[in-house]
Image (cartoon, rainbow over all chains, first blue to last red; front, top):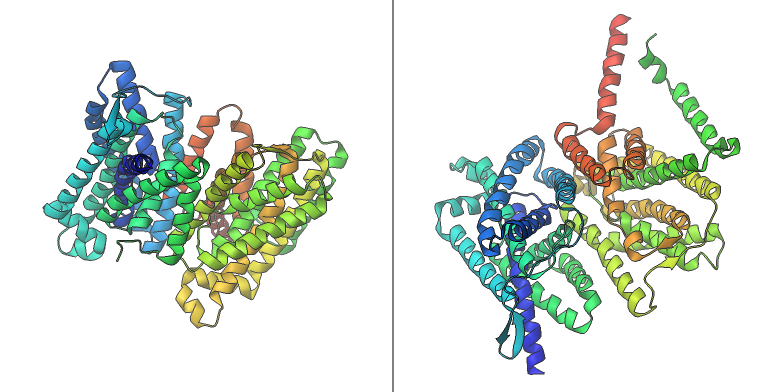
Length: 289
Length: 317
């Protein structure tokens, strides 16, 4: 009994690490840059497939790929923000209108990125084995790669928190999250900061994708599922709250793990029920203002 | 007399519409090929999805991603009841079931801020899909269902009837005081409430009405597909496509969404078998380009040209 519980809890935490990463990324994109980026999961997919290619074709260690995929998705994200979303933000009349139009534009990006990836990588399901030996955690067995994933997720999450809390740039981002207009007045280069947030979100997604590829099979249409999970976690943790997204990720991972242990087919449905109840009862999230 | 002044004449437009309707209604009598009928049915379906989306989301600005849910409810109604009840009853039940679902969802969620409403409605599609999949596999031990077969001409006529009814409904809503009220909700909901509009009730009813037609379309389309499963019936694409077509066509004018749906449905037909990936890629590109450079959609372009023509005519006289 104890072992089953441990199994479920640790399994949930392992899942939650990934969720926390992608949700922090989306939290930056939606909470600060006001883009509910439906293409968020596509950056994750790009990271995952690139890592797969680097490993199977060039023999690059997946942990090294983290340092390659992150910057690449960062640059793509930055360019996309400056070419598409900055223009939309300026031409939109209100924040509400911008949220709507940027979400629809990100739908377009989803189709574009996904289908380019399908052309480049084909639609078959891919996988490789890396660090797949079992490790004993208090009586329950887990693959080493999942533990590595969790360690990286926690480390990156902490690093991000420190970046936002302690650095000058982090302060500018927090100011932009509270009020872009006023942040601009006190000397924050708002277009650059918002683009940076969007790009950092893409970077987190790319890194999460590289980590996911070590544990799960990857394919060109995997992105949307993770986007949806990220949206749920962001709402769960509270919009614009980076720590909220971090802990929300682990909470959702635990819930997913518990539901899967009872009724495997219903974990995604359970996420939605939780999400819908949350939207109606407490739309500001658990750590939201 | 230039061309603009001729085609902006009211009687000309009505005559043209009547002519198109008569042509479409008599088409199967001229031994039109099965391909033509199927293509037109698909185009009608997309017009129904798009125009019914615009009824609610156009004026209010609430982006609904629920059409796939209502469509799927219609489809499953046909799959479950198609064998025991006559076709018109099945379609009616499909439409009513969607209507009721939309009433419930609308009453629950239309207080939410715009963007939350979009996420919620999208979540609804996948929630129903997942629960249904689980139910079919665990409880009924099947994955898909077979739907009774109906001949293509009947499907064509049923879809045409749904389409005409929908266009009449959409047009009368647009011209009535309710249309004006919806428009004012889109402009400023707070102000609309203060002028005495029962905002929540109006939004919910309109949302449900748009679901009604989508459910009916789903019920008849199911008979064309003959085999369905939760992934086919609750395919999120049926939520994205209407939005894309409406924005591409432009929501400022009544004909905009219709135009967008016709063009896209035809594009899909031409491209999807040959270049499936390019086809979605092109969709994405068009969506981004329209968002960036053509906020009024095609209708906005046509209107510009139209106005230009009228001004030229006035300058001549």
